[in-house]
Length: 225
Image (tube, rainbow, N blue to C red; front, side):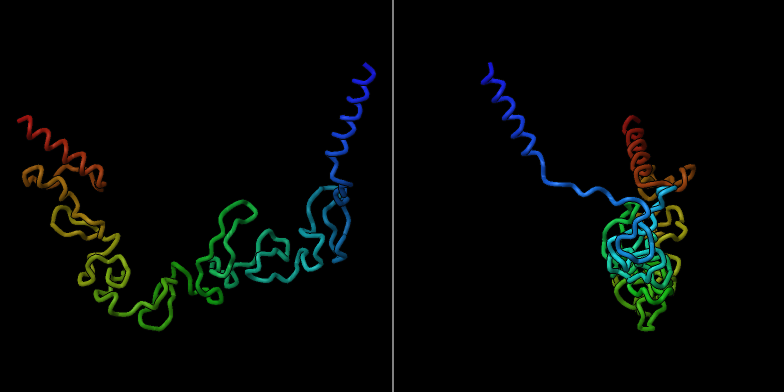
């Protein structure tokens, strides 16, 4: 029995010794200024963080922020990625997450000019890529002057010879023309099934799924007859 107790005590001592990784530094006390930049790490009364990095003397509230370096020098919770203040992050900003876990992806191709960003109005043939599409828009890419770039130039205007045809245009029912460039004429999908009865009484606007459903129902009705 005594031998068993001795072995048990030795094994316990070995386990305790193996689990230790050396002395652990206690967390810094509130009110400390480890980097001596004049700002304490956190308020002792409220617990509020004051210096967001008390190991870096260049990081403190009001410090000069360096854009796109991934470091929050001024302790506002973000790295500076929108120098021109147009609401769009620079493409030079490293991808990642902000303090709230939201993805950070830059899309502003010129963060020194607030008039240049992905949703800016493009000025044709001025040599400047205002909308950050990758190139300046030329007149040959918008022959009908409706403000939409032709398919041949990488745009989404399905008929650059008609200013009434472009994404978002008002669709005329069953006229054989795809005014809004969604790929089909409105109601054309059911008009042929109904024997040319047109689109009277059909819901508007009608999605592609609705059109297929109505077409199938009409086809079943004709078969039953």
